[in-house]
Image 1 (tube, rainbow over the protein chains, first blue to last red):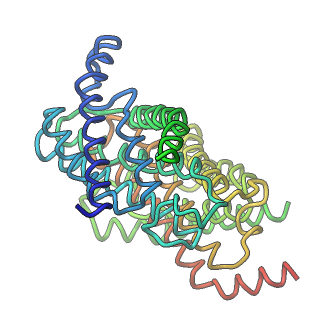
Image 2: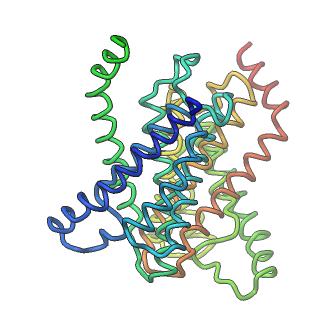
Length: 191
Length: 188
């Protein structure tokens, strides 16, 4: 199989696994600790957000082709939402990632769909890109999904809850990535 | 001091434009719609954006105080409500400016206009600040007014702020050559 395609399928598989972990393991724990509340609609720690952001920062917009169907499937199958809600979430979250990437590339005069790991632009730190893309995507998702839940389910979700869950999820993913970076790099180097 | 006064005048002009042209036109176009909480386009937000782009974080103070005073005087809302609305805009603009400064490693004290190497860079940065500040402001408004109005209120806030910012963004685009000359003279 073509190497980039294999990479993208692997990343989509990893994202699907993290979505499954979020909805099957983390969400029941959150509900047990904090009560039912609105956790079905918004989590206090949302790991998939951080992973999507890191993928986009490293590989650019091409990774979104894999992210979109994974989000749709995860919301529909694991969370059990209606197909319409899953579709809206997939469109809003994927569109949000794309808009954020464009917004960060545009002021710097870079190619709009490009990631930040190409090595030619050393002045732009990856950490800054991850934090800003996570924040902007989270704001877009918060506005879009809170409006959708209010109009369809009649549930008014406090939009800042999305921000807290998404940013905490991003920080956890970044911490894990920093922790496992050296062993991964050493393994690749050894090979 | 004259910068602060000029900024206040720009804000006052934006309010005049909003109340004398935008509001009557939107009521004429959509007579059944409720514009009490969100307009189609928010020119004062765009003016606030321009002020913050030029003055940096010091411009936020002008936006908060100026907007409170102008809303209280011209639109007739209570002083507390006017202050709350102005704080939303001020915080949204400040966080948008902080995001741009963080990304581009710019000094918050001076504003982006004073640090831009060319007008085209400034226009690109203005677009970035417009969208980020509009998103933050939309989330703030939606959180404070949670449960009031209809479900699309947060999206309407977002659209009105983006359109208001784009109004300024397009104005800057058409003035880019004049701005370029001004920046060149300043640098020289």
